[in-house]
Length: 67
Image 1 (cartoon, rainbow, N blue to C red):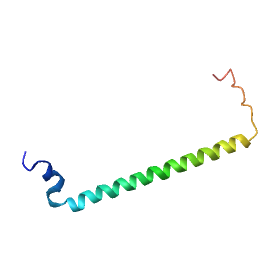
Image 2 (cartoon, rainbow, N blue to C red; image 1 turned 120 degrees about the vertical axis):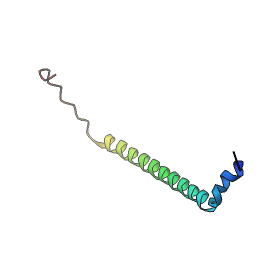
Image 3 (tube, one colour; image 1 turned 90 degrees about the horizontal axis):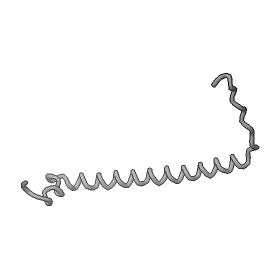
């Protein structure tokens, strides 16, 4: 194997473009994860509040002839 690890990290002379691209992609993915997680927790809290405020309804019993 020629070049070794330093040649890998140099990316054939394109390291100045490749590594920042990886960094930007990682930051975007981390940001999307954070925003999605925050929105999920916010909507779960909203659902819990709505379910607590809603009157409890009984479910209709299943029709024994249909099962």
